[in-house]
Amino acid sequence: MSHLSEELRQKILAYLPRYPSKQAVTLPALHLVQDALRYVPLEAIREIADLLDLSPAEVNDTMTFYGFFRGADCPLGQTRLWVCRSLPCMLRGGEELLTHLGERLQVRPGETSRDGKITLEFAECLGACEGAPCVLVNDQHRLDVTNGKADELIRELKGAGA
Amino acid sequence: MAEFQPVLLRRINQPDSTTLESYRADGGYRALTRAVEDMSPAQVIDIVKDSGLRGRGGAGFPCGLKWTFLPKDHPGPIYLCVNADESEPGTFNNRILMEKDPHQVLEGIILACYATRATTAYIYLRYEYGECYRVMQRAVDEAYAANLLGPKILGKSFHLDVFLHRGAGAYICGEETGLIESLEGKRAWPRIKPPFPAVEGAFRKPTVVNNIETLACVTHIVDRGADWFKSMGVPPDPKNPRDAGSYGPKLYCISGHVNKPGCVELPLGVTVRELVDKYGSGVWKGRKAKGCIPGGLSMGFLTEAEFDTRLDFNGPVKSGCLGLGTAAVIVFDEATSIADVLYNSCRFFAHESCGQCTPCREGTAWMMKIMDRIRRGKGRKEDLDILMEVGSNIGIMPGTTICGLADGAGWPVKTALTKFRSEFDELVKQGPTRRLPQVAAVH
Image 1 (cartoon, helix red, strand yellow):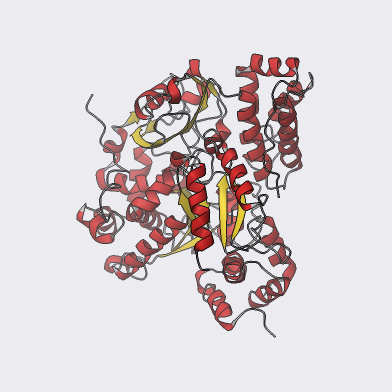
Image 2: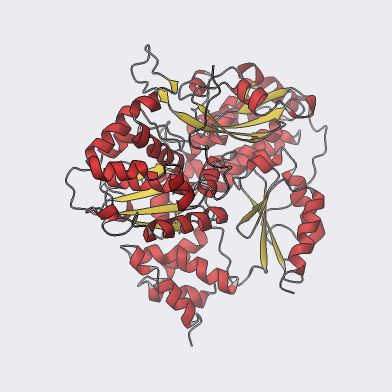
């Protein structure tokens, strides 16, 4: 049985005409799978490899280079919350914010809250230093995040899609 | 002097600044129309060459010259890779350009492809810029619908496809050959050069890699001419025959301990002091600055006494830094421990080293470990010399690594240890005097 839905396979194949090589679809495919399943299972790696005429080892090699993708041992929660720890944010309380969020969610960076709602991550510079400390909610910036705003954000994310 | 009128940021506060309609109402795509109707590709290259435009991504390489390195009469395909992987700490100017005025960027991309005869452009966009992704994709869709992209652009025999390609959170993808490897679906290990991308780049074909801000400048150069562009900035130093000048407007990012962090557009050559005092509204909490990083983390440090350094392509070098970099100024106040700042820098590079070259992989990790014990007051007296030695010997300049990431890691270490030496000596001598909070563990 195929691990990837027909819809997902079609979405991956739709990227092929954009590039002169099939291998170039590796990152788009990994993004599609992780978005849908919240992690990239080994079976999916094999199926992506199959679709792109690659060895599963090639897909796995690319996937594991980018700390971005998760395997079966640590799937993502519903929302991925990145907290910037690079210098501009660090100077304005980024590390304290990360610690605060870790305490509130009772997780360490990389882990997911027990209700499966929020995965906390540290990030290197998110490119929104005018609003330091900043966080990224999946792929959307929130600027000037105080501890109070962080608590509000947690409430918002925990209430979402309940 | 009259107040400088922004060029690249002039439209960002308008409502609907992202739509094709509003861009056109402000004269958008006028340059492109004129170029495809009245100019040959070679003439577009010449204008950009004459303008003295240098790459805004960090290295400052002359843009027009880069385009001439493509082989002549190549049967194609030729690719343009747009470097939108902006990840240098402190840098966010490209994010603003893409979020607020995507068509200005896109017009530059189309002009660059017309000039270089590239038939496909890939915008390699860091994953974290989700808003940029959506805004740019809408702009690309609008451009296809308006015959500004696709086959027979504006009725001419000019074909171009533009695709957005999202990264996956790796700083090294901003290095041009790392970007190409990543685009090809591989780990982003930079390539040994030569061959340079212009000869053998993406998919082994001739490729130009340009930064977003550089391409936005191209739009205005073609619209208003090389002389207009050269009326801004700093001409070449007559005493330095290799200086290509620092012409045009530049987006300066100001962050850290200032009252008003933000991005401001000014002619190249503004001093750090002006940026901090005038445009950043001074150092926060009524304090004084201890120093800054003048051009993104990789460039090294300036002390407060060096704040009169001009941020053009030469100024930071004269003050002992690696270069202008991305012109992102990160200010820290007098109450900040230089050891904490340098540790943060070392941690960044250790995390982002791609692991291909041993001196960088090992060197950045050891610099981080040594800096961690120094900032905890557990430094050994030989540590500062070891840091200096590692910082000076890893990188493409000493010739021990393939790309410049390690140079960027070493420069902050070298300059901090030289310029703030007494503070480091003191920390090593006095031993543990402060308890640092245990920062959340790494996953």
